[in-house]
Image 1 (cartoon, rainbow, N blue to C red):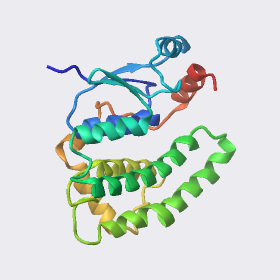
Image 2: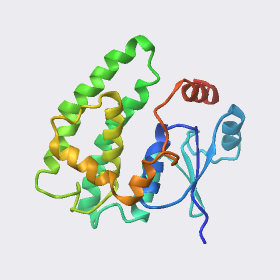
Image 3: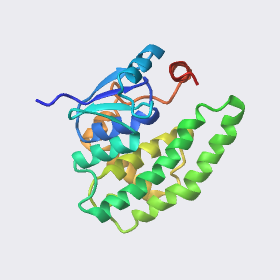
Length: 221
């Protein structure tokens, strides 16, 4: 039996969360090594495991993979979530790159000073509704259940993840997007994803003060 993938990261979302989502959606069990000290991080550096001195780090198939996009691309291809041909793969890349832009806004928002957070949150919600969600509402207008090739893919997983992230900032953000509402319900009920959304799974909660302090301490930010 192949060893489970091993994920090295902090005990929170950050760049690793989309990797957790993709593995969970593919029905793949994984182990986590939680980074809590500066010494753990320095040991990974000294051992030469962090190609660009950054986490996430994922051990899988005898490799030690870094750089989030590369890891996600590998997993999507490995678990047949990357389209049937080059055209579909490229479209999935376009969608997931756009989603990643929105995700980064949300992730960095938590690290902003308290006096900037309200304005930043308003900016995120405005861009979600004016730039990002209309793209996906339009993509679903042809009656298909999934974004690309009418087949479940990495793009669908990534979109559900970011929808839930934005809804944590504003519960009614999808009120103008009926097709995205249906999409959210449909994808959330895929058995592997439904399991990941249950309490007690390896899905991480929104960043709290402890998580933010740990990241800053380990990376000396």
